[in-house]
Length: 358
Image 1 (cartoon, helix red, strand yellow):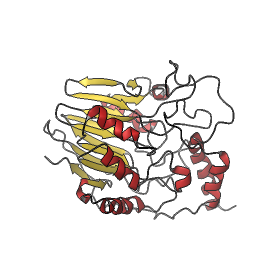
Image 2 (tube, rainbow, N blue to C red):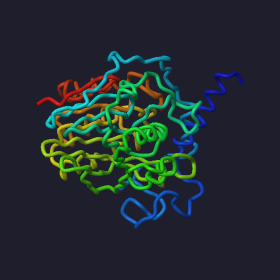
Image 3 (cartoon, one colour):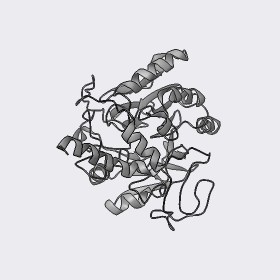
Image 4 (tube, rainbow, N blue to C red):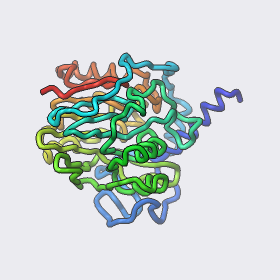
């Protein structure tokens, strides 16, 4: 076996440690490694689960995908047309600015705070640092150029969202408040003992200060860091609420029946901005339950009655089969088909800065 084939299959093995989390458990665990708490409508005492029934893939499905499905070839480097930026350190309290770092990492600046989502600065997203999905573009903000981070949102524990190396550097430099769903604190604290963490369940809300509330909301996904801990930590979306604005952020989600979007608008009313994943969705038969595609993201955008939308989770790490720019193209087509102004929902690229229109 030549080196390229070895790395391909080694990378498949590393990625599968995480992807196998969406596959049926062979040996049921007797206890949860990360969390102990009461049984709820989405926790059975050992495993977390989505509230609505969903298709659960099998190991044979996983192998069918990896062996028989055609995977698009990404360019070695998929350069962003935007240059690396140095964000303003201070913005007016009534302004919301979002700067794309890459994949699911974005800097949200609102009410005078710097909020970083799912911070990942590592070269690869994998349990093994020399194999697995690697970057196809560099971060849109260099780590050293990041302003002092006040708040970090970690949506779930997959390696492309929970990067312990990056978190460790941010905690050492800035001592931010980390908001993350139940169980993920155990993972973070084991690596970063001095991290300031607030965990939450779906429906919980916390005041960061007098200007910002952080709400935990449901989304349709799953969790795993390896083959034995699948669904032992919760996944969540967030609503950031200030006196004048609401920002709805989802790291990963399947569309399901759309009820999570409907429920957000019932609870919070119209949101000013919905930050939604649009990538890692092919092949559809395998990914549909956990990753929405751009067409579904546009439908969700409409269901939650957002004024504006930003698409992320595409073009940086190749996790699935679609072409590198397919999510951006598909988003533009879906908006045109549904007669929505293209400026209302854009696919962010590294270094791109977006300001909420007044």
